[in-house]
Image 1 (cartoon, rainbow, N blue to C red):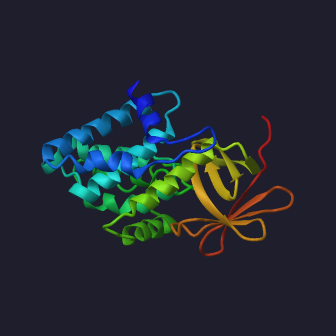
Image 2 (cartoon, rainbow, N blue to C red):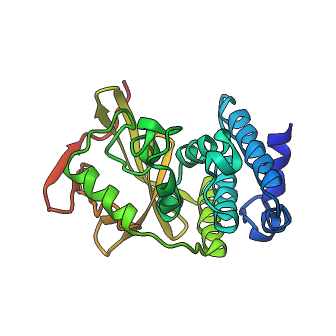
Length: 268
């Protein structure tokens, strides 16, 4: 019940749109003041995260709001070290960061994880678990530190900015939630990607004037030129996508190498 109430609370909406208001959680976080209260708040985020992920269909509105709250918590009171806010707070940050399915939010807040990358609590979870939903061609399982992954990791670690524009972060998060509720959705193409762990569905969607790559449950904001050529909105992995007239899809990485052509999805 708490999760349902939280989801309703964060959204000012009608049936067609959703908007996360920064003021909804800014005031409650600003009023915390003491370390004891901040630690309690991290524990509440932990419970919201656990309750939500235990659902058969976890709510993205909760995972997004949790990440936004964590971003502002850190901005106001610093990284949740075990010494200051307890062991659970450190784990909670990594958990809710990984559970957020919108890659653009993860990329814009990734630098906040850097103070914990050598933490005993995280051990081998960084960077693999921290980047689980941020690079579309990986499946999130024991990512190998190959050239592309290493370059993406360096890019993220070099994008350090101690001040997050929370209004802007709430705005792009709202666009993600709006996308899931919009009625004017057009599927431009649908495919399957073959991973060692199985097949993963892949779609390119047009929702109003925005374009998204959907891989499984994860979404990546795209830009599009006059041709059927797309590129990730962030500069994280510099990957381009092309749709051919026959419905095939081509990925090319930052070096221009073709990453593969995946067959159009068919009924099995």
